[in-house]
Amino acid sequence: MQLRTIKNKNMKWWVGIISCMALFLFIIFFSYEKMGFIWKGVKIEATLEQKVDSSIAEIKGVASKATYISINGREIFINKEGEFKESIALLPGFSIVTINAKDKFGKTAEKQFEIVKEESAPAVAVID
Image (cartoon, rainbow, N blue to C red):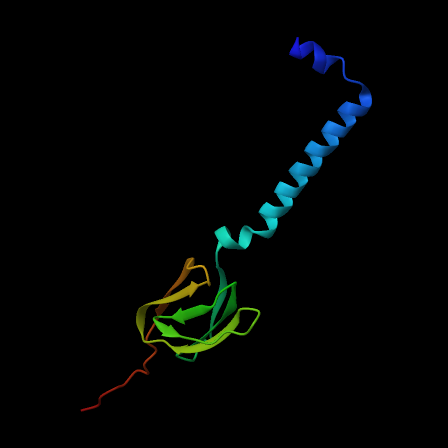
């Protein structure tokens, strides 16, 4: 009996039901997209630039939605857009530079750079 009642509804009823369902789905999708910052967390985009003849490297990037950021455990400053720029000294050999970021909800992100700096010492000749 119930199925027959639903089949006998007119077109206006069906358009109204489908419109309500579409509006409900749109509200759910819109809310999911707008509240995504809560479960997506912080995202780090960074580059490391090093000059060939220098032992100083510069790290530049953006940590979107970050409230705290550190490089190798040392806190650095970021602006309101999440942009940062920091210079670090590199020692000869293998180095790992780690960037950690945290947002206000406690979500964390990490990015690592592995660098091999060859020691470029000048040759010394000893004459007897």
